[in-house]
Length: 264
DNA sequence: ATGGTTGCCCAGCAA
Image (cartoon, rainbow, N blue to C red):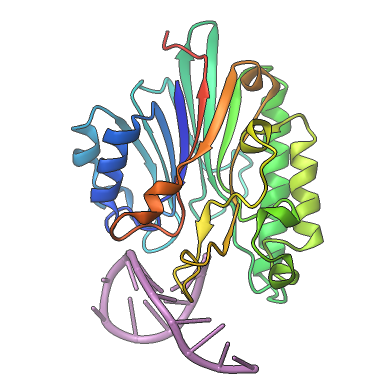
């Protein structure tokens, strides 16, 4: 079973790319971020025609996440379940029946947090990371396979970007950001790409500006974090870099993982 | 140091 995450940067502008990728890459479950669409205007028909169930948690203009899946989810939860009244749509969880039990897959879009001296933005990011950690702790207690997939807006290590000096003061790379990410990981998660290869300078995002793609000036901020029970079934991950060469690309590419799960 | 680009949907913000 192939499970992928992709920050698509506007699903309506990217629908042709998305359909082409679904056909050529054939993922079983897809976590989308930055759909930048309300639920009512999400182009679901084109995707359903390709054999996918569509679950969205949209918002007008900004943010928004979705789950596409060949299996119909048994349960879908929108927003982090802490009742914090977050008006930004950044989290959706689906529960799927696989042989042996339940598989939980979450699509998350962690706040960017820039500029870090803004009175609201960086504290919101750090608070959101803490809320995600609390959620993860509660789900890990279930001892089920769980995949936290998405755009974390976190560069975990200096070798996850082209030039660490450029990112030194950025909300994606500040020590507090990386420490919060490590606290989440150290609950027991495995970074799927990092578990696949020791290769450094692997990126999932290249800015549209200043020829970043042409210079391979990228960052790795899209991650699949695997619970112990998901890691048991994990084979390998891949960054689908070729998608960045397509016409009208997103600034992010899909990151995919292969697992031994089978539909129940 | 500045400017460089894209998507939302038409003004300016977010990234």
